[in-house]
Image (cartoon, rainbow, N blue to C red):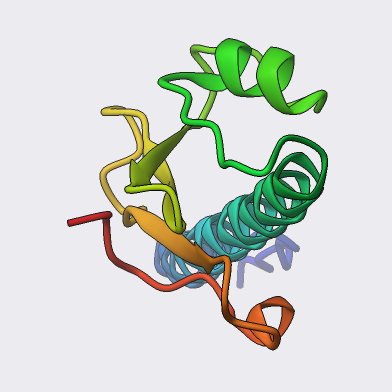
Length: 140
């Protein structure tokens, strides 16, 4: 009688099962990572909008008016801020609403379709304006 040597190798079925489990886990990981990135980018935009709002309040106290700007570089120069350079994830601008209020907005670049435009409004007569949070909407 012939004796068969026992082999310590994985079968094709076992390899396929391991590959399927690994691909499912990596897919879940990538989706979770992307969601974390989006949340971080949106927190960054909220922080920058609050910074712009505070800078506008300082500008108002010094010049007795608000100032508008059309892009990151112009907002940085006019409001004495260090916003990210133009061409990044977010494009910031400030639209004036007469002399008493403004709307600052963060518009995502085209490559970031899962991000939403965010805005924050500042009013000269609103003493509690620092409590307002940016919202997922543009300036109308």
